[in-house]
Amino acid sequence: MAEKISHTQYDDAPLSTAHNLDTTGVNEEGLEAHPGDHLIGRTVTINRPRQELYEFWRDLRNLPLFMQNIRRITVSDGNRSHWVVEAPGDAQVEWDSILTQDEPGSLLAWESVEGASIRNSGRIEFRDSTNGRGTIVTATIVYDPPAGNLGRMVAKLFEKEPHIQARRDLRRFKQLMEAGEVATSSPPNPLPKA
Image 1: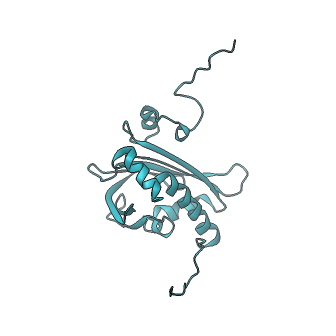
Image 2 (image 1 turned 120 degrees about the horizontal axis):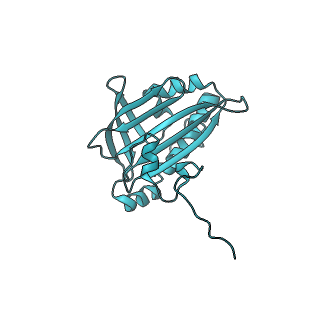
Image 3 (image 1 turned 45 degrees about the vertical axis):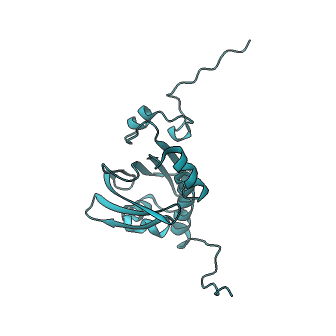
């Protein structure tokens, strides 16, 4: 008879692969998480130096260049910023965020301030690749979806769900940093439709 396999909450897999988010483990990673929050983890390798990628990301005004849903980010001081993000149904959400960790060349971490319309926290890590070909960029985000799972499903229908956006945004970041532009399928000057 086969032995029953026991699963512990502390294995070697990244927390972002968990089906049921253990907020204790996330909080130990330095991210603020509450029961019911959702965790996103995405990684991409970019053929650029780590410091260059970090510096580009550190200037938060650059993020709308490759993050599709971000309308604007206003930086009020070195650690506080105001975000305006497109939501499903032509709506928009806004919140203020504070940079909680800044390790030049390797890590940026943030959390939204109390009362944010979408509570979130996260971190972007920059590590040299083991084969010497660029930088491994890892985004880990914890968020509380508005209207819970129903709101998450609606966002998914409109392709505004953070799991989908994180993957696309990191892909666009890679394109921008390696090629100097983000590839698009629409022509640069489309003709008006008759």
